[in-house]
Length: 364
Ligand SMILES: *Cc1c(COP(=O)(O)O)cnc(C)c1O
Image (cartoon, rainbow, N blue to C red; front, side):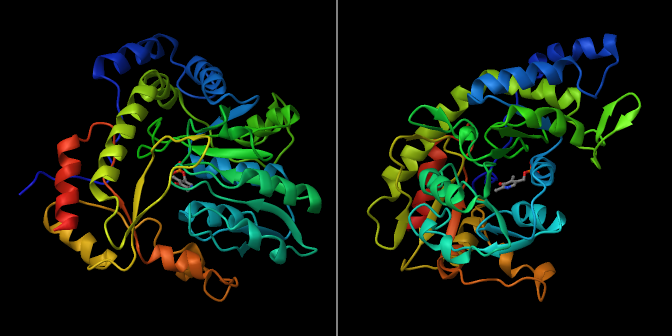
């Protein structure tokens, strides 16, 4: 029996490195509310992501809720159901109606040829999702958004550090949400950020995460509490020092997976996107006409103590909590993919030899 292999394993700095980073917090006793660590990480991330504006949050989900709120959107928002619960929930929790668009079968991001037919008088925004480290067709989305005067907010939870022709992915659309959850390529334990185009939003977003407070005696917005604390920021400062190294390790693992699984009848791998530098966040495999179904492969790996993930499954437009509330739309490609996709274990410290063993079990 192999030792237990989870689908992911959180990146952590050396224990001593983190202890060194948090030492001064015992002197300052400044634990949260935008202290020195928060300010430092914000600056470092702005540089790393190559974006003009950024605000940190306690997690990615609240970051997304806040940016949707800050744009004061009305009525309908076009999005995809092939995502984590967070994307659709953030729309619904803002009192907006999710209008579900299908995905394309090549990289599983929004099918841009199907957006325009979903636009109505009520549409105020598009919230597409960059999936697994692949990015949406940002050029076409921008064209559509301009034509119909729509806001674009990307769920970029999967694309930390991804660049297109050298440009940080956070520069597309009006804003992007990044997640720094423990399971993501870069983590602050829990955490997230919004990057955005309009510098004028900074004051508003900063206030939103702190109850809408704008001064000692003024509260201008109905904000929430979504501040990143100093211990989270310190973790981020440490992890950021090693993230390039980690992405490089992920790249090697992905190459090994590809060399083991390519060309096998019924196993479909996603093609790398042109001009995109990926972060190798996930390794999705589509079992499409393979001898075994996705669920059979999932179970068989589990018997060997290897935990893959049906991700994303189920689709958000089939969630119980949305039944009879929202039209699930027409998303056959998303359904097809959700029923066949499996993401295999992938994290920087996974041994290449384990990749071979995982593939051997799948192929056998
Ligand atoms: C992780 C994730 C989120 C939510 O981020 P949290 O930091 O966990 O709140 C949102 N969308 C997608 C696609 C994600 O993978």
